[in-house]
Amino acid sequence: MALSQAQYRKCVSPWPGVTLDVKWIDHLVASVDGKMFAMLNLGGKYPDRVHFKVEDDLFLSLTEQPGIAPAMYLARAKWVTVVEPKRYPLDWYAQSLRRAYEIVAAKLSKKRQRELGLLS
Image (cartoon, rainbow, N blue to C red; front, side, top):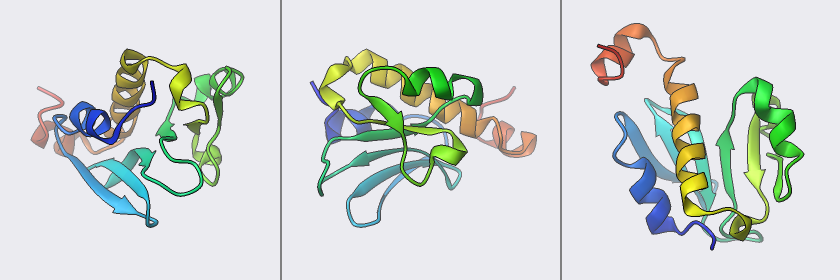
């Protein structure tokens, strides 16, 4: 089952500092403090594709998995695209999106991380 827009929103919305907005006509972009960490195609040629940031050292191994490819325009920043959205279960998406959020949030200033409640 592909990740629906409602499931995507439900997954990422509760995390501190997350905003959702539509960019490039049909991409629902999740950002933390203005920095993108995930996208969901809402329509276009490839609806339901999910794109997200991954750890640098996992990028190659992930893109060798069936149904996952380097993200167009964002591969140099270590983003992947799930080109076969029905291949992966919802809990896999939840874990992957959470990790993408954590990667990007960790690059925020310590002050901002504390303001968002990410550091004690």
